[in-house]
Image (tube, rainbow, N blue to C red):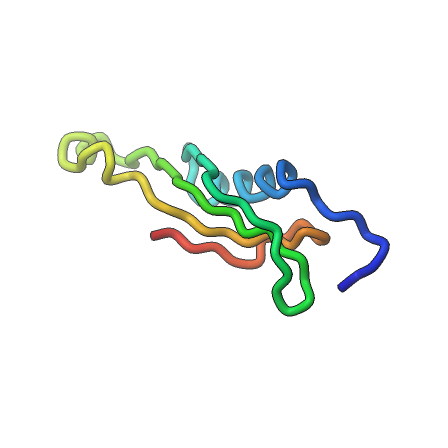
Length: 91
């Protein structure tokens, strides 16, 4: 673990995660529900979880798919010192 370097705050980790997800999924809305600071392989990591709502790309999809069809759960890990996204998963 790197000593002497300040950790990100939980709010900063959320902003990094939200920015990352919004780049990957344009015009999405991110809601965080569970955040933890953990140590994994001697690295401090924020594990962030929540729901992401995405807009349908086609106008026809609004009629075919229900409103809940574009909501997904996500898990994302952000390095608490470097501020880099280490992994993410949508389900």
